[in-house]
Length: 436
Ligand code: MG
Image 1 (cartoon, rainbow, N blue to C red):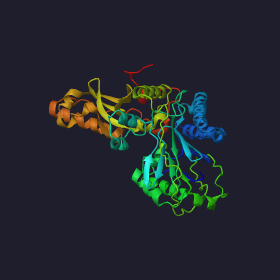
Image 2: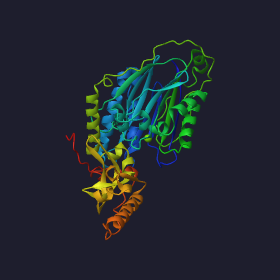
Image 3: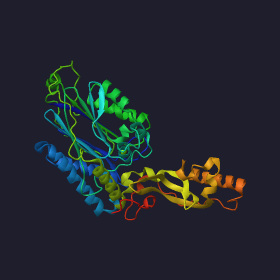
Image 4: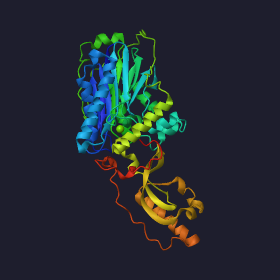
């Protein structure tokens, strides 16, 4: 089946660099979302797509797509180990090989593939994220996961460990179908309903990509945004665009440059020949693996990421979070989030105090201390502690002599959390569970 593709990648409105990369090299298409400090994110996403570009995937079929991703994984891992500056880098990848009427997908991380058919949008890939894991375990609803502050923490990435689990699935394309590959800078900012609306209205794949990126930016553009749209052409359209560059190879770019669509086609009247009625997203063997094994794998991957000093590799989000909680019976300022995953605490005490937690918790305003009282910033957390002190002093004459909390060094947010050699402070994990 002939396809037409469009692509757009944008740095967004907050980040300084675009660490997303894409590959548009008919019949192979991919999006990668790099992570890691300094230039690590760039390098990881670009390297991985170069590995796909170099592999003869078109000639060898779907197994070659997965094999190329595993090759890319080892390349990213080795480069990260060899170059201190790149230590802990990683990347997601969501890739498609169009072969005949079938689209083969391979996927690691939280970049997504969607199928847009007959006006309906369906997410084909499952995010490899902590919150998705919690949804699977029944601890969160999908709606809660969508808005969860830790939704960006991923549990699988290229560059994390040598043995990579790759999800594989396949879809039989019908004329008029659109496949969307995107980084979380789109899916995290724009609802599925709005994405479906854009795909309905856009005249061609490039217009769809342009509109989707625009919508993510309108929503705040918190992250890098990349969208690749691949359209299965109707038979009557194929003739019109035949020879019009449909096979043009796309370049890997990581600098936010836009790229024009591979080709454009006016949507013609519905040919209504649905050549392949089967629409089955097929789970790979990995997909059918028992939950228990999968949980173990996820836990091990998370631990491997942590142990490899790749904490920023699971996103720097945690390092920018603050809360007031309890440590050793005393009120304390924490950096991180008050949750544990796979036995690893995602926070550490930033500033201890002398304030007794039990007495503070006896006050109505502060009874939630054990669960953690979230703060907007470190200063905000310190202000909360001072309010606790004031309340304790006035009600029970406790803590009155204490001074102002002495702020420790404020960790630089973002990628500097990628440890290069030393374990990042936020992760000094006290492991209670699956320690290797
Ligand atoms: Mg991203």
